[in-house]
Length: 185
Image (cartoon, rainbow, N blue to C red; front, top):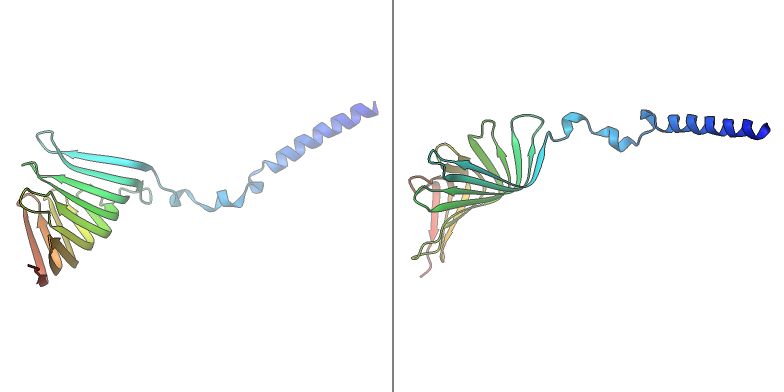
């Protein structure tokens, strides 16, 4: 009889201790510190986004190591990003950067950190490579622009300037101010 009493008492004690230890107040504090608003709404790893033109051909391809929704809103952050713009005649432009934000509606992509913009190489010359800290790409107009300092390397030649506007459709590049060049023979 005494044995059954201790067995019942042990089972009741086990049940009560399990209930107490599994209560929300006893859970680790690290899990409770992040609110739902601080967590990304969604994220993607090794993602590729492709936009198509009216003919159904790829026009813009965005590759990123990671993409995440910002503050459960319409803005999206991209990390280690590569944007490829395919010109209708077959030539492409490549824009690389550490981070990027796609503005709500997807009308513009702001790329920051070690930004590099380059066209395809031709039979006659190596491509020009633009280096800057920030660059905004207007998707609808196919224009990349910055108000920051830029350096353009092509072959052994270098141009520096403050501000740039590159129209991919028209294949033009305009330097805004403080343009300096160094041309080596």
